[in-house]
Image (tube, rainbow, N blue to C red; front, side, top):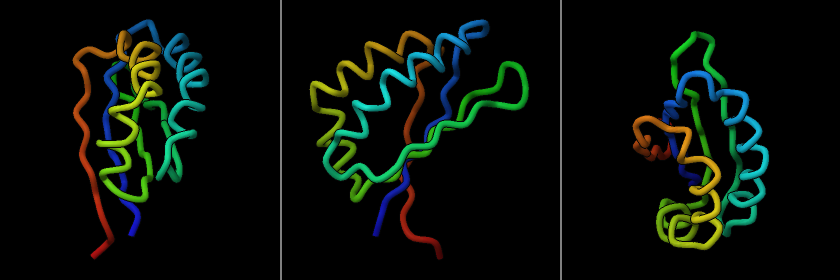
Length: 97
C-alpha cells in the first residue's frame, strides 16, 4: 500500500516564478530518498491560491522518519521554505475505500 502526502503550499505573492525554479533544484533531493515513489506539484489557477503538492511514498515512515530527518530535507527546506507564508501542514492518505 502506497501513502499519499498532501500539502497546500502558500507561496508568497510575486515569488511564484522563483519558487518554481527552486522546486526544479529541490526535486532531485526528494527523488533520491528511500521509499519515494512520485512527486506532483500543481500550480494554482487563481491568484493568491496555494500550490498543491502530492508525493507518493511507500510508507509514512519513509517520509516522516527517513526524508524529513535527512540532510536532503535540510537542503530541501533551505531551498523552498522561504517562499511559504505560513509554513504548510502535511496530511497523509492511504488506500481508497
